[in-house]
Length: 500
Image (cartoon, rainbow, N blue to C red; front, side, top):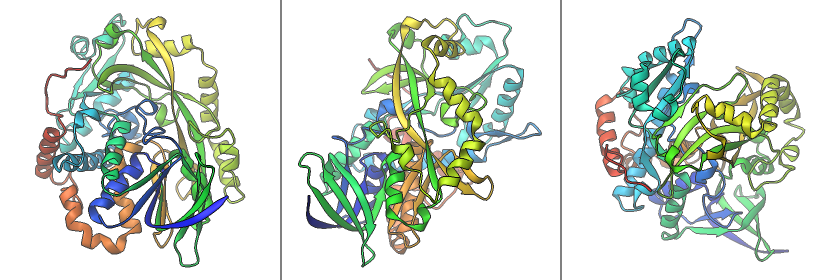
């Protein structure tokens, strides 16, 4: 049943961190614009942004070893780490602006200070970590990073990991105190609470069924109200598709040339959660290891302290799983229906290229709890099975596309924006670092899709993000000034944490 048509300036699809961020930025830049949001679930931030569906790492490349590539000569390329660190810094600046201007409150509800550490074992890996440390330590972005391969120092830093560990095993870590744990679900809800008080129209339990261009180059979005069963059409001059894994299907419905030859491969995640408070109390850091051969970067093992709803938890993982769903709340036919005539050969080529990934996922899916405990014991040698429960995390969809460097069917590990030539529609695809780079990614959307406004908006953007248009690594004084300011505003200055 179809009933009526509604016009609005901007439509945001999906009530996750990306739509929340874009909506908040646009309301600061153009408060008079009418923005409408459609979300198929009953609340904001319940799918990919949910605290239990991602690792909550403020991805600043402080501890993630897959962002620093070892070259053939043993040197370490930190260029990707620099880029990601600067991106997260941009997000922190924007959140700080929101708190300073009382647009959101109580930052401790969504961000907490937490050391970020890298952990490696074996002589070759220890040598790599030391080379990585030497490449990063003198860079102002990574100021304060420490390296140690001294068991006594490591016992002080990571007692839970060092207890009962064989003394003859080479082991090393880097540690940096300026890391964070972020609850992106809580942040998403804060942003939407602010937006709802500023005339943003958010519609929960509304599923987008189709998107097509109108004769006057606007976009018509067909939306099904899951409570009433009615379907309505809504038109807008600009549409943002921020539906997590569900974005690919909606992008394909637009028919824009940029949507062709793109596929998606779903990877699900599982985490072990410690149910013994005495064990959890012995660890206070995010500790990242190295990914196994054939494993996707999102499966880098890590032992994480988490703060969810102001309660301290301890998680280990992720263990990769496979489901053909593109969303945790998606359909078992998502993968099959995403294969079209234009991306069929792209998808087939990706399957051939990634045989080792397929093998890895199969092994992960059939793993027993005891097998997973063996992996945990590489981090915590005396871990007991009864102290750990398995929880299912979120779905991620890795982008598959044809590239000049990788050729046909290249699996992309990252986040990217796909937009049409005239900038009237954009979709966000991909996975990690994802939510941590929400603000710089949405600035990219502005530049791609609202280029005609960016000059007039520049002064306001610089008010929200003081480093806008500048490289922080090339402006160390500005970097220190911003770091001091954001740490104070967001409550990240060194202090004793009191959590339950």
